Image 1 (cartoon, rainbow, N blue to C red):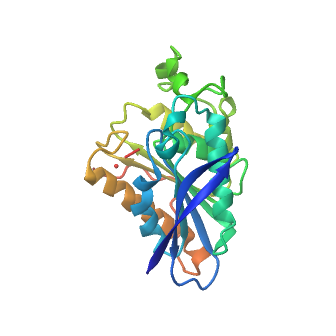
Image 2 (cartoon, rainbow, N blue to C red):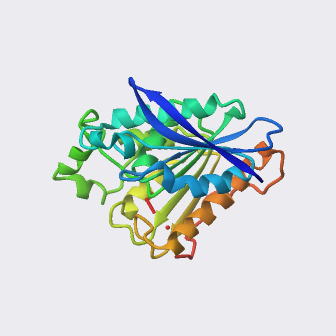
Length: 268
């Protein structure tokens, strides 16, 4: 399927952040929208290849730069979680208003910090499909503190080594209230987001319509090899194709309720 790419500027809090829309050239009807949210230290271009692959399935995709990254790098030390949340909400609204998008068929794909913020967005916007790769977790306290300063908490590392109940964390609570289809992908050798955090997210999705859980064996947090990156891309594309098939007028099998580890050698 032929695609076209359009640069977009997203207004948020009196500023603008940059994004890229990836749209199938032949548009016969409104299509699902897929929003990509990068991790801390990432950028929109990291996800363009995946956006193109998923757009070719018959979706409109949007990648964008969170504040504190790329053109707004000078804000890196001062950006708060509230700023990032507003960025994602603004990007979601831009995608949902696209004339080729059905606003009732929206997907959000987030990695690490982007997955954490994306989970919270599901309580504020109608996200139908949610994919979280190595989702980070932070204490609810000090919400307006610059994100970078959260790592100075002496309990920061230990907090991520413990399991947490959905009712005790804003992001996990959002997952507990999520009723759509969810994908959670863990890196088998992740030292930044260890297993207890991912397990807490998986447990929180008790009310999801479907939950698919995969582990990329041997992979680190940032998916530092091409094989791990490709393994994640393959998992994501298969899942998106499966869960959006009815929305694209196709027939597909129901996603598995909870799947265990995927043997394969994935990014942040």
